[in-house]
Length: 303
Length: 303
Image (tube, rainbow over all chains, first blue to last red; front, side, top):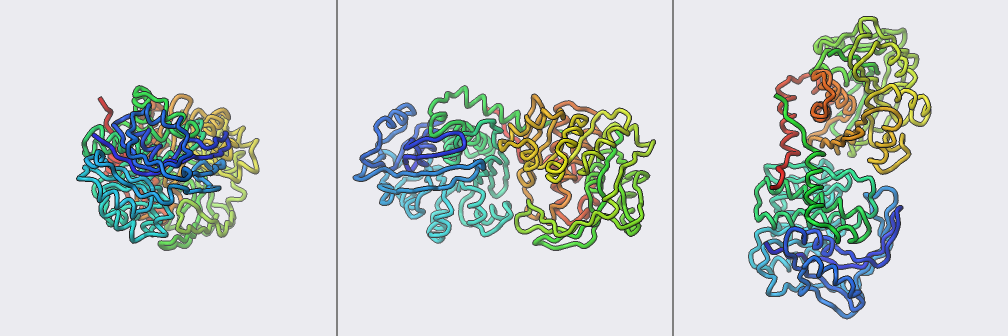
């Protein structure tokens, strides 16, 4: 099934205890798109500047990502500069230059409007709602958000959430959005805002899925080498939504598998800087790690 | 199979955002013992003072815990005073009065020496080693420790670890003991000190089991009401070791189940203050929650 992603394309400069990259390809729509591309055909809506390196188009091509919704605007590409200390769960932003992303107003090409799966990356909730209004009748709309929007645009965010089926956010943000420390209570509160499901990302502690009747807990993959957590959340969302689009089902069996495929893609992503790892997978890698997740969590019932 | 536990018996005064208790029954040997008592017969070695309330003996009796190794010494019982703020993962100690526990020197009664399962609660590693030397030939020895001993007696702790099969510790302490942030590397390092397995407790994020060839991830039970995390780690250890003693097997299938039974007992424990919840369970509660854990983590393979 067709997947539309709307979000950022960025040039990231990242430093971790294990190395650094300068102006590497990044952004929520990119991490999501490449991760999802292993499961389904991806259509991208984002904005880049005149300075966007043409070499990065090779990555989109390699993953058969439709870039006809990628606008090149006058000005420079969005840049993010950040670092991670030994606690790889916490990014420290050193510099953000929105550049052309500051006036991003997503226009969905006609050919994209019939997309059955839609992911709204972490952008202004008013822009997210604009996207919802432009698409025909998707089977599933999921969105991300962040502390900035929870603080600055709570009303607009809640309005958007009424039109979204699944919210995918970080644990701290779920607590902040609900104004509640206990994660189960926080999840119930967020569900009361409109979405029928909530995915809570917990970094190296995995992810939780909540709906009215279901809770599912996915572990993170215990990795000996974590080089760069940038994009882990979007890679998770890409694997999660990608598998749902591939299966074309919202059955709990597939939602659970989707959580694991999200965890699989996030675990690959953090194993190298930028898109280096995510760019070079094949289905056998993904399937093998999915099986590892089974082995990591499976236990036998008692008689 | 017979289970010997050596540790503390304490009177805890605890305050959380949801209430408080004064001089309630606590201590590592108590939480461990009551949790393990649902699986196997427990023998207790600990020290109490002259002021230990006799009413608390009813709890030991109710759980058929052998207290012939419980010494009543001249002086007062060990007291701990602590509080938890909204982050229930982190206890803040307000006051510790070791009292009779300060000169605790565990003497294993002859009748206990043939115990096949031994748990060394969080006491001085030199005392833990003394216990190991007093028992005949247990099938399994597990121990706990804490930051205090890692800092003050690293050599003694490492000596003890050479005689222990399983170390059960908190995540932060595993990192501290290994001098390594990455949890997989930290686990490998700790295993190199001697134990053949390591259980890492992560509070509301569950627990990890590591051996040379196996990693198993157990989630925490998502609870809407967490009243008091005191004793969660020892209840976990009690469920974990208790099930291993009951099954009499060290097979990976049973180690995995044991991790879940540990999680089950910890999840019950935090639902009320002191021993209130743990004291009043029956096997049907435990079995039902074990099944809930299966539902929480289970997913189907893909074809």
